[in-house]
Each structure stands twice: as C-alpha cells, then as structure tokens.
Length: 419
Image (cartoon, rainbow, N blue to C red; front, top):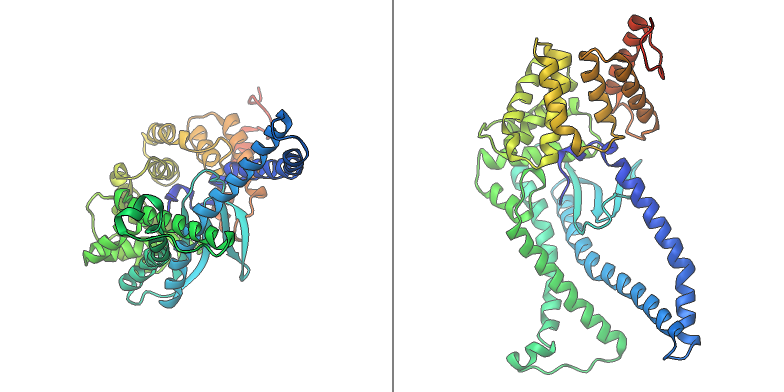
C-alpha cells in the first residue's frame, strides 16, 4: 500500500496516468506489430544468422516480460484480494483494487478498469470502507490481517516445492518427483516463485513499516494491538482515508471518527493525518474556526510525514490563511508555504493553480492570478470527478475571476491592466 494524502484527489495524478496510458498503448501496439515478425524470424532463418538472433531476442524479451508480470502480480493480487475478502466478512464495503499500474474502481455498482499511472511501482492497494463505527478497531485488524494470511496460504505449496530445488535437495534428502509433463513442471516452478515472492513481500513489510493510514500490514497490526488511544486513532484515520478515496463527501464523515482521529496530540504521523482529515471535514461543514485549529495542529506535526504529505498540508495552509484568517502577514506566509510545496505537484495540477491564483491575487499580480484561475477552471471542466466534489473549488475560482474582471477591468487572456 502506498498512496499518500496528497493523492486523495484524482487530479493530482492526471498527468502521470495519461502518460502511462500513452506509453502502454504505444508499447502494446509496438508488440502487436513486431512480435509476429520476431516469431517468424526465429523460425524462418537459419539459427546462426543475424535475423534469427534478432527474432530470438525479441521473442525472449516478450516471454520475459510476460513471465515477470505473472510471477510478481499473481502473489500481489492474492494478497490484496485477501484484504477485500476479510473486509467483506466484517462489514467493509470494497470499492478499489490497485495492482501496480492496473486499477479497478467501483463506480455505478460495478468495478471498472483504469490505469493508475504507476507503471514501474510493484505495490498494491485494497480499498474498503467500514459501513458503520461498530467495534472499528477489531474489524480493521481483521481487514488488515486478511492480506498476510492470503500470502501465507499461497506460500505453503511454494515452500513445499522449494524443498525439491536442486541447491536444497542435498540438505533435505529429497528427490525431485516425476514432472508428469512440461505443464506440470511449469506449475511447480510457478508455485515456488509465487511462494518466494509472497514471503519476500511479508518480510519487506517488517523492514519498511511506513506510517499513516497506509502503513505496512505488520506495522498497522502492531499499532492496533497497542490499545487505546493509539489503536482507536489509527482505525479512525484509516477509515477516513478510505472514505475519502471512495468519494464520500468530507462533510458527511462520522463525527465519532473525527473525534477518535484527533484524540491524541503527540506530533506523530497519525496525529498529522488525523488533524488533516478533521480540517477537511470541518472546512466542508463551513466551521472555519475548528478547521483552522486542526490545520495548525496538522502543520505542526507534518515533519513526520512523507514529502508529498507535507506539501498537501502546506498548500492548504497557504490557501486557508489568505481566505479565512487574512492577517497582516498572510501573503508572506502563503507565499513561503506555497514555494515549499509546489515542487511536489505537476504544473497542470488544479490544486496548484487554484492556490497560486489566490497567492498572486494577495500580492496584487491580478493578471497572473486571472490566468491561473482560468486554467484551473478549465481543468475542473475537463476533470471527471464525482458530482459535487469540486463545488467549493469551482465557486472560489469563479468568484476570483469575477472580482478581477469587474474591479480590475481585466479579461481572461490579457497580460496587462488597462491604462
């Protein structure tokens, strides 16, 4: 699992996903055209000719890529499906499955495929939201435990097969059983490979614990076993995170989850995530006083977050201080936070343009603010987000554009103010 809070909104990964789609489409078309040619060259030319060598290399590369996908992604899919099945048993509603570059999101009652944008990343995510707050800590533990149990189940036959591999044969005194044909031998090799990958994934969870709602399974279970208040806070933070990914409006998040997510102020990663989600919820409810309080707490604890998590909090801090606090030094603070955070966003990010337009407006650069706000509004028009999820963002951009046009006499596309 590896998705930080800066990626909760889909627009932040639009460029990456679009680039992935283009690369994958081009690669598939290239293979569709070239692979038959490579196969023909490997069969039609003498084995010692250059054309035969090129054909064999092409076919071999294709086979290696396919084998790598099968060896790596079958154990990954088994692990993530274990999470989803365990979640279903305890009342979690599944809506998301990510396997590296491949994703399936539940929309309109059915799972639909999409490219995630992370083509090289070999990690997964199982998204499921609890349907109620009943016994959330224990149910979250069962949901998380489902993945490691599935990996262990897949590793058992692989471990048995591994005993027959030649380097270990002399140690265990076992002989390789009859293969029963090439298909049977291939299955034995795949089981051994899948078992090794499954056990390696569990070991990586011990060595790389991470933090926040998407910490590694072993780390999450350790936190849940600590008891109140750490376990309750983590269960609530994870539930809020997955509700956000599932498109549930922040104003509808249960108050009991918000309270549990912010119950402990210890300047930790979970504290930062919990306060950030509390800010998002209270902001959606127009309770700006409490929203500002929790945003300040999140910013104070943000040093414990990954870089893109800190960037998300700094971006929202820059926008909030300009729009709702409006102190004398607000433009200076906003510019400082914006400059520290902007390098973690693509240039076409709607969030980046929206907040930059607010910063530029506070500094008196009205033409530049108008240009950024217009670009962000066009990006929202092109973004296929859930209905109502961008209403506040759109309202701010339209209000800013109207104010600049009416009071400053500028028009979208103009570079200089009128004389």
